[in-house]
Amino acid sequence: MNRAPLAHIVDDDEAIRDALAWLFQTCGVPSRAWMSGDDFLADYDPAMRGCVVLDVRMDGMSGPECLVQLLARGCTMPVIFLTGHADVPVAVSALKKGAFDFIEKPFNDNELVNVVIDALALDARRQANAAARAGTSARLASLSARERDVMERILAGKLNKVIADELDIAVRTVEVHRARIFEKMGVKSAVELAQVVSGGG
Image 1 (cartoon, rainbow, N blue to C red):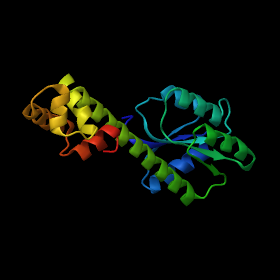
Image 2: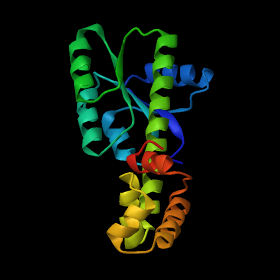
Image 3: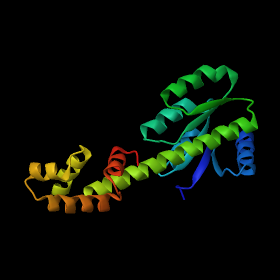
Image 4: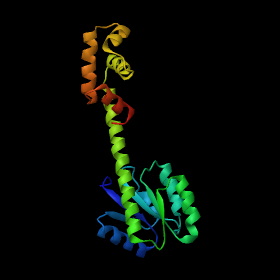
């Protein structure tokens, strides 16, 4: 359940929570609301996906204080602050700490929805990149020690004969290792291999 991307609304004003939930629903953005930073943190799970729409000024824990707690827990979801005019400097400070954006009240509905959609897209890209890195790590772990030796030399641009000489093995053996490395890493060329290993593929 936690993995469905949501706009996580955190605001102590029930009218604003309801208005935001309705706005997001009409724009096809699923959401869930909490009445305080403490409540949200109590339910927070690292598997949560989406973005956080966080009021700056709330009873109890403030929005910036909630952000600090989220960052301390390794939260990577983009955080969007809703702020009154007097709190703009606070919101700017929060941006420097890692917030995604801030929207000043009274906010323009379209502007807020666009920022939320951008934040959801950013979170999706981050998750896709993390999954790709995890997949690459698993494939690298499947290589034997000798295949790693050969791969390092392939990535250095060395020819099969040079690799064979350096490792004191037959050229045919290098060719077999190269084929296995490409198969395990899911690539068809040394260029693709370099892109995957460097995180670009």
